[in-house]
Amino acid sequence: MGLKGILGFEYGIVQAPLGPDISGPELVAAVANAGGLGLLRAPDWDDPDYVRERIRKTRTLTNKPFGIGVILAFPHKENVKAILDEKVAVLQLYWGECSKELVLEAHKAGVKVVPQIGSYEEAKRAADAGVDAIIVQGREAGGHVIGQDGLITLLPRVVDLVRGNDIAVIAAGGIVDERGYVAALALGAQGVSLGTRFLATEESYAHPTYKRKLIEFDQTEYTDIFGRARWPGAPHRVLATPFFMEWKALPSHENETNQPVIGRTIIHGREREVRRFAGTVPNATTTGDIESMAMYAGQSIGLIKEILPAGEVLKKIVEGAQRLINQQFAPVN
Image (cartoon, rainbow, N blue to C red):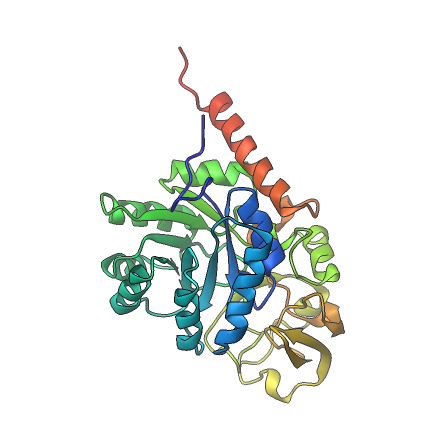
């Protein structure tokens, strides 16, 4: 039994665009080389030259197609132009309106458009805009979470909505292994998008301490205490670290702007101070009080037991899903 790919990729497994720069060329190329859809993450500011450089660097590591994720809530027009000029296979969009004009422009450049949505209404608007696929994100997901519905209820509704429209539906939120993949297929998805599982890989650009915490902790919480000033009204799911548990009742008028600096980092080539309660996750360059920084993670964190190469993660999920389908769900003769 073969697990059919999506959007021309070998397998229906997407590596989510991990922000702000955790999914770099090395991770994306490793996923692409293993037959999945790897997604870079564009900066949260316009820097088309840097975007081109990231795309070209990835192309030196793989000859397979890949994509790039753009957050529409931040300046992005020049970045999108660069992405379309470079004819990257997939433009993934999140947190904003995916317009018909943008879809047409991308299609003219031969680029497929895949928004991530968190509600039925948002899925309807995306389908009307003529997108190629829709990532349905459940509230179980790590990082920034746009909707309130669980994946198991939202996913089938979106599948029914786009039936016959030639739009692939991809499930996201709490999926880390073959069981989650097969469950998503049973609910009508053609593929799955994994964030936290690919965060915990050798090629991810996350700080080693952050990776270690993904193995150590098995609880997450849905909150809004990180990055309130920079990205207001953007709740997120984080690891329930001692720092978070101590501060999770932070009064709503407080934000990172008047907080002490707890570290330094380089994000997409720019040096930054990290203040307490900033929404910035620690990457490989980050120094300072790592344990007090935001650490995004999905609800299925308790299922991740080791840091693996990204290609191995993909292979294990595909082979495990094939085995599961053949052994447990094959028709009895």
